Image 1: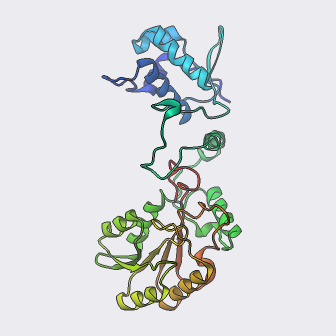
Image 2: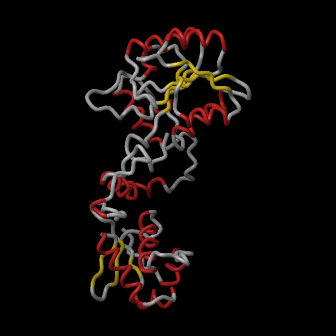
Image 3: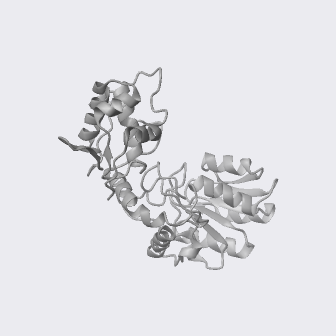
Length: 320
């Protein structure tokens, strides 16, 4: 670990324009939040020492009481360790601390978003990632397919689900919708047709229309999928791509059974139509996992699997 000591001028430059004016948030809390961010994103190295409260107050042109309150807050949260005569040392808490919310214990669930807040394992993963980061800083960081170790992990996950996958068949992008937009740019042109379920994920429709393509809907029956309707629509419209969400479909929640997956994969193989299969929801099962990935059912079918870390772990992880 680093034993670096930050001077007050260096810390002031790192903080930048940390103070919001006017603001209802107390200045000491603004300072604590700014310092916490510097610690979490690695700009304040672990085990480094901060300048004294009096010195920092002078350079930031705030009272020493304000600095002391901010430092006390960070010590309470586990981001600083202070000893008499040795100043404050940067550390990371062992477990995530609850974030205060309006209403305290009586705060109702936020039903505007179908997602939960991050669990403690997310904070622990970030801690481990910070420790593992130095080995990756020796390169430029420009990895078109994504970090190899991450692609290897994703490939193993697909293998465990019944779809033999190599790391060089994986590409990491900025979220599932971003991945869909890239595929539309690769596979389609203005005016091309893209077959979708009706109804389907609204942001998928927005991405298709944003690529100047025409979504063509195949209505979902009361149960399952209409494979005959899918085949007929492909034959009639000659789409460049089909977008499907077989795993806990948005918005119906239904899951495609193995027989239907086989039929859909066979249709793709016979018609040479590329299927883009959105698996964003694949890990949101209760009693039993869904069948193997759709690409498992016909090796000759042109199928691209599109996954995401957002729903599986936490919405703040934008990985697709």
